[in-house]
Image (cartoon, rainbow, N blue to C red; front, top):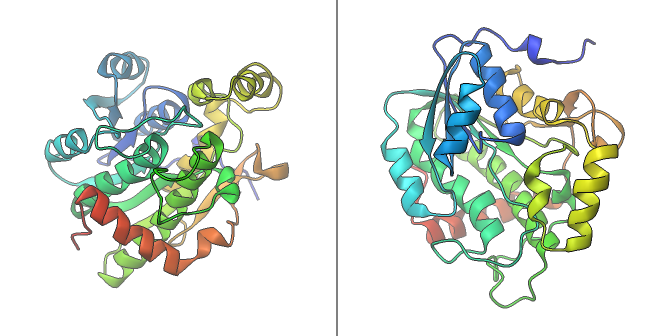
Length: 293
């Protein structure tokens, strides 16, 4: 079978796509590829100046809008400013292994940005979406455990890597429960998920552990990682390929670290439907945003 590449993206004339975190890394590459194939791409970014610089280098129709996923007020303002129908929402933005910090609403930064921010955004926009919602997770979700009694690390000793893995596990549980709810509501929208493998981006530059940061940025990114353009392929595949509901896409190479995208498996914890429903209920309570369909 021929491997998927950006050349396999169909003509997207008339499609409107939102990509969060589109000013750098795999989000920027995904946004550029979709715009080059005819979609109107909204770059949802925390720093509009960086977003504008990214958009200026893209071919096709783009616009830049400010979105801080660590602020529910920013998320609500962004969603309120979106008019008309959307084809695809790509929940790409994220932070990785950061020092302990809190969002504007008091959530632990990684679960707040990577999961709760995208949870709120998706539910605020879902009535406008007509095709699919793509959520970017990580192969490190396999290391994750979900503590619904202390999701925001208020009682546990904070561990940056464990907090990141929990947030990426939450991404997959969210995507599966979103699909269950869409199906129950009779919607034709599908939820898919993807992970980039090991991609060389600036995501690793904010790691709290200096040794981990040094390894990932100076050694891993240089000698083991694939580039951001290749890392974006699973996201693009999940966004445009004819896939089934609740599909999960990652690189097809050894250890899912690099290579052409294909359907991949997930951990047993990521397939726990009861945990997904409990996480959804807790996320509604924390964000004040619920599924509207």
